[in-house]
Length: 279
Image (cartoon, rainbow, N blue to C red; front, side, top):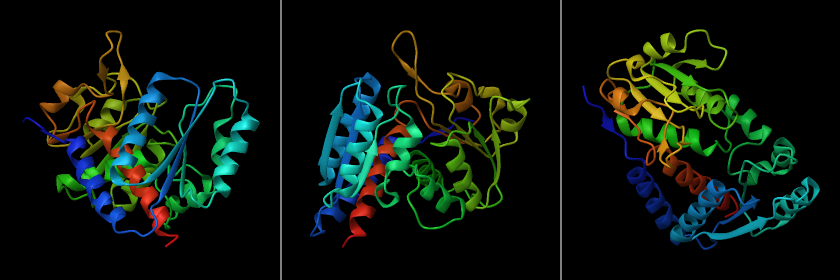
């Protein structure tokens, strides 16, 4: 078996084109503010890509870049300022932030209706109870890719590798809401391979190159690789042994070009939704 490669760039382009058409018809253009603290090269690339996509679909957008020695109090003050700005519909603080800043305090400062990254405890609670709210962008992008496979999720065995607040926990909730039977494995799981081997759907999101072995993959499974890891030679690789996994899977995402573009597309979708709520 040779897997169908799920082209995240192509799917993201379809999503953002539909958003561009929608935004063009809106009398009030939604506004997105992105805050970057420090000069981490990867974060700078992510922010630049987000700004370019926002520009392409017609959003108003602002980027606030703060020095790495910005105090937590100063960052919180900027977040509160954006929260009070009626022109701003969505606020995204690019993580990670410098170690002297408490990430959760920053997230707590975001108003839930402007938290387009879906990280606030209110949005997490809404997701847990299957209520309306903002879903974290990467898990939302994974669900969009799963929909493109045409595979029925009802009753499927899904294994999520990783339990982060950003990806692992919310994607497990979304899969559960889609009637999957969900197992979350992590660093304390005794036999990760045994769990993965029975999965119809595998979501890998731990940030460890090649952690998920190709030999573990059930024939015909859908494999979404969220990991983005930079190797010593500068190349990028995921959490899954791509070549070996692709020989067994039915569908698989590449790294790069798989889940990553979908994250930005779903951020734009959340922002448009936040703006539309204001009329």
